[in-house]
Length: 290
Ligand SMILES: NC(=O)c1ccc[n+]([C@@H]2O[C@H](COP(=O)([O-])OP(=O)(O)OC[C@H]3O[C@@H](n4cnc5c(N)ncnc54)[C@H](OP(=O)(O)O)[C@@H]3O)[C@@H](O)[C@H]2O)c1
Image 1 (cartoon, rainbow, N blue to C red):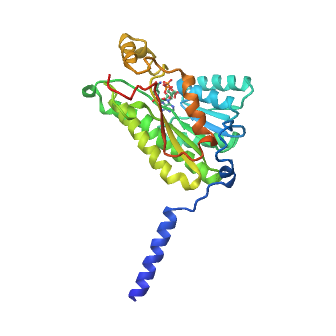
Image 2 (cartoon, rainbow, N blue to C red):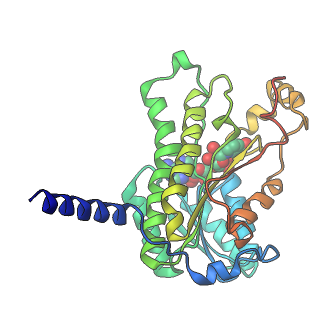
Image 3 (spheres, protein in one colour):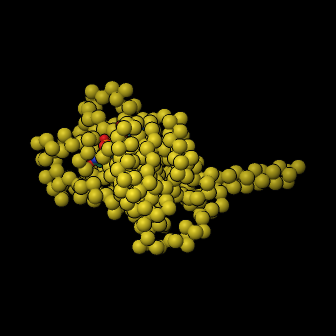
């Protein structure tokens, strides 16, 4: 009787272990391409970028399209997405604009379904959508706090889940790149909710990488410093902004093109042995105090 109980217990433990640790299913063709560092070309790949209506996301869509990927541009402002997609198509690329609110799982699912129906399951997903609403901590309402966390952290969670589910179902593996920030490591006045959301993105990246590696899905993050976009242009051009930039080791903001190396590395097989990494691109901004 005791023996039978022991054996049943062992079987249950084995079942549980098998469920928790799926067999390594890294697609063989991907392993065969490993180390082809020169092949950052993304011909035949499908990339979905959230927050692609402006700033970094729109730039990432252009760069990935130029590298040969078909791109899905997702955000809420469809007019801007369609303009960006048109421009990519006119330059000879393949692009699809699709509406997505990253705070709504149903909206994320609809956008992934549209991408899959029209172009195929994405191999590369850039979770880039984000907001920053500077407020002093003592004046930050619970709604302000929730709004920032809901786009910047919950959004990365919803997009990551949809991406992982689609990649797993298609048994094709892939690369998920979460856009964090140097404010995931350090803090700045008036940006407590933002900094907390980005620290969360960094930990979520590591947790996803750990669980998805056996499915051939790599998950990494880019932590940018300061790049002028709609999010921060007014501040960076102000006296306070200039003074802050002057204190940084490289004493300037970044240009969007300076993110391309990290983006193409993580999107391509050149990073086939990287997962759970966070690449900082900040001109040294987060290195030192003053
Ligand atoms: N610029 C920097 O210096 C810097 C530094 C570090 C990190 N970042 C990060 O880079 C990412 C892009 O920021 P950015 O500088 O390019 O700012 P941006 O120009 O303001 O772009 C933000 C993008 O996020 C989208 N977005 C906002 N809320 C959304 C929602 N609920 N659902 C879907 N999309 C949403 C916006 O599109 P719609 O309004 O059309 O939905 C827009 O395309 C953010 O995650 C930001 O935190 C930026």
